[in-house]
Each structure stands twice: as C-alpha cells, then as structure tokens.
Length: 444
Image (cartoon, rainbow, N blue to C red; front, top):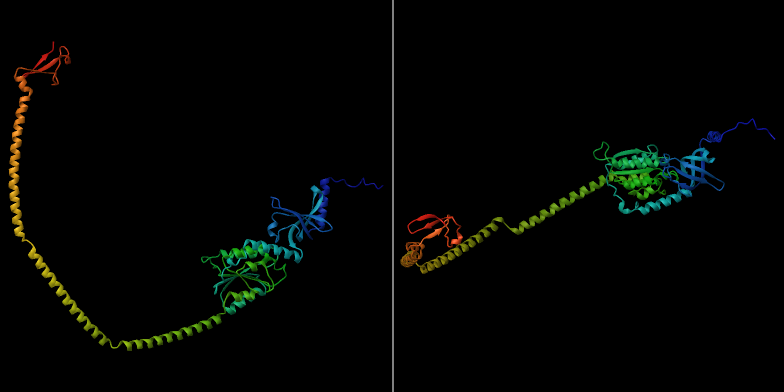
C-alpha cells in the first residue's frame, strides 16, 4: 500500500478555496447552452435557476445589478445561451455559472417568445387603431433614430433632400446587440421631452429605422421597452425596420409602417416639385375661374342696367307719386282737424261756465256756514245749561256743605280719611278738617 503520509493536510475551507481558484483560473469566461429550469426571483433582486440538457445540469446566478442589462427575462423552459464566469460554492460543494449576458438559442424559441409578447401587448390594447396619430402632411422637423453609420441614414437623408428638404435631427443609437433596445427607447423619450422653448425644437415626426437582418439582428425592435416608448410618444412615429418582409412588434404599435427606410422618407414628406406643379395648376385654375366669374357678373350687370332704364326717369316718376301721396295726407289731416274742432265746440257749449259754477258754490258755502253757526250756538247753549245743573248738583253733594252743618273730617298725617276709631292707635296724631280750617289733635 502506498504511503501518503507526506501529502499535505487541508482544512475543508482551504481545500474549497483551492478548488475555487483552480476552476476560475482554467475557466475565466464560458458560454453554456441549455434550458432554463426552476427560475427563482427572491426579494434580493438576484435570480437563481438551473441550466439543463439531457446529459446534466448546472446552477446559474444572475446578480441584481446585471438584470437591467439583459435583453431577455429568464422564463421556465426557455432555451438560452448564457455567457459568464464559472465558480464554486463551498457551502454546498458545487460549481455554478455567474451569468453576465444571455441570449435566446434557436430561431424557434425566438419566434415563440415573439408571439407570446405580441399576444400580451395586443391584449393590453397597444396595437389598437384608435391610438394611431395622424402623420403630418408637411413636417418642418423630423427626428431620425438609427445607427449613425451605414446606408440607412444616408438613404433617408438623400430621399428627404430629393423630395422636400427639411430640418432633420439624427439621434445615433445601436440598432442591435446588448443595450440597443434601451438606447432606442431613450432616444424616443428624449425627443418627446423637447419643446418649442428648447434650443433644439421638438420634431413633428419620428422615424425609427434600420436595415434588414435576421430575427436575432432585429430583436431590439421586439423589446417591450421599445414598443411602450413608441406607444407613449406624443410625436407620430413611422417604423422602418428591415426589409418589406420583415415584421417586428414596433410595426404594430407605430402610427405608420414603412416597408424600408427609404419608404419611410417617402411617406414623411411630399415631392416638392409635385407640390409646386399642383400649386401652379391651382393658381391657374383660380385665375381662370376668377376672370370667368368677373366676366359673367359684368354681363349680368349690364343686362340688369338695361332692364332698369334711365335713373332720371325712375326718380321723376317716384317724385310725382310722392307729391300725390303728400297732398292726400295733407287733406286727410285737415279733415281730421276740422272734425275734432267741431266736436270741441259742441262739448264746450254743453259745459256750464266756470263763473256760474263758482257763484253757485259760494251761495252753498254761505248757506252751510249760517246753518253751522246756528247749530253750534244751540249746542253750546244746551251744554252750558246742563253744565250749570251738574255744577249745582255737585256743589250740593260736596262734603264741604256737610262741614258747614257742623261736622268735621278726621284724617291721618297723609290726608287720608279715618272712618273707624279702630283704624287709629292710641296717642296717634291726626288732622281734623273743620268748615273754616284744619287743626291737629291726638287720640286719647
């Protein structure tokens, strides 16, 4: 048996570190293809899943800060190619891949993902015709979102210059690869943030364009972030992605789809020379119509003048009629005035003269005055006689006459008559009224 007593002794942690270093040194970056199984999305923001095929499995991790950079979201059963670093996890004595980028493996998987995403966005109403904005007929400013290099931007600028030159703002973006979808969506949002007060004015129209390519090449234009940016744009958007046979989700949400970038330029502006020719034609038609109308009106006016006759004759006849009417009105008023005057004379004759009325009223007033004075004297005499009788009766009934016969009136100090002796206490002061005067006294 071989003697291994001279081999070094590792602790578990030391040996795990050696294995980790060995794996990471020999496998710095790897690309692994497999099917996603049991993806987990805990609250930490990291994503954990297993990559598997018929021969084996490997654990995979996507750190929280890596997720925003990925173009796809891990889903159960999705076949992908993951690029990242292989490392070990000492806690469970296993190896794993830390994913830094991910792409869908195979066109079939991409088509399935595309169809699922299309159905989802369709259900949300992003593709409805009622949300489409009209394309301006003659935009002053056009924003183009595309790659700054290549034939696409040259074709668009050349076609716009040929048809109807206008201000063109080019926002350079990557049209494929990692981060391209974010750049495209950001360009759409930034164009919408411009206004009439900014140095760069807000465009009247946006063109999102790129040349043809495979499904993977055009995938950025199928990303939700791009589709939603187009849907939320207040500026009308023309999509011109790929060739006429290529279809991306941005084509469904945009306000107008062009088969090619060149076609987008043609749909953006009319042909200036055609407009000039059309304007010249309309100008000629307007002038011809105007002169024809003027000539027709002139002929009609001359015909009407001939029918009217000479103005002097017309006014003479009207003046003669006016004189007759005035004379009739004058006679009518004279007749009315005469009739009213006669009526006034008749009514005046029936009235009694004011002097006679006044004399009659004076006589009545004198007669009434005499009657009133006589009546007043009789009333005064009658009332005087009655008053004398009552005065004599009152005098006869007065208590002073009783005092004259020898009686006296006993009163308290307040002048109140005392009728009974029981009303006054002994030794009380009283007053006694005699016929001639009042004396004081004390009750014994």
